[in-house]
Image (cartoon, rainbow, N blue to C red; front, side):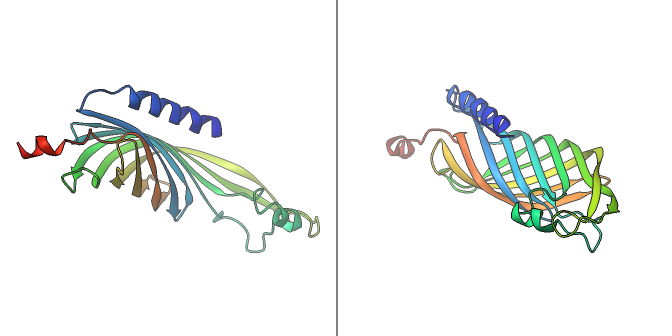
Length: 207
């Protein structure tokens, strides 16, 4: 996963700083998500003429398994490992979308970047729970992951704050809907790349 994120940022930055046209902005975004699942988003955004946006993204989110027995326990080993070995419902999505950008001030430092798109979704959920008698040291149930593939509709009206031309913050409400599951949440993160056009000199604005 770390290698994928490093590759994502390398691609975003190399493409961003290669841009010389005022009509094009391209940047990468990473956000932490909170909602009925928790996780993160990594996205690559392209904006044309400060109006039209295109987005490629990946999201990975988890939650406590809904199918777990009421008396399920990770045991002492799970507690010592901070629950990292516990099973989770997993909601993974690779998506693409297009939309519209609205600048909320003349400087372009606050804007709404709203996109709608489709994603290829992978759902992994633990099932086939079987009780075992291993004492308090380990889990009291065995289980195995069931995997489902589906298609999701992804709606994301992000609020972006390009603080400088190359760095900014983002608040990203997100809705991902498919026939099996729905993720609704909000992400908070940062943006790196070519975020907005070069500031216009005051002398030019007065003309």
